[in-house]
Image (tube, rainbow, N blue to C red; front, side, top):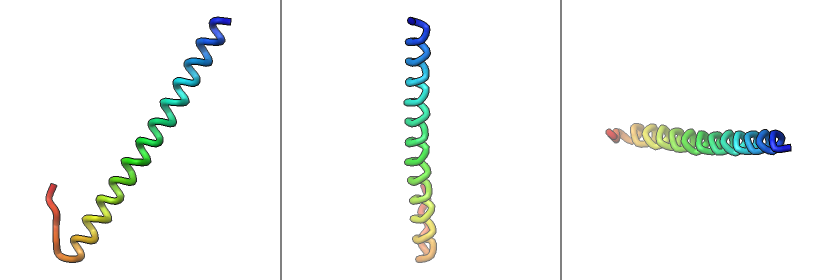
Length: 51
């Protein structure tokens, strides 16, 4: 019984970790694409931003 409980806890923790990682990955991808769009728009106007 205790082994099963440990397995369940591990699986749940793993699932939470994967979900959290995916949502973090999505937000960073969104930020990066927003940044790229921002740079492209500004370079069309002749403005370049240096970080």
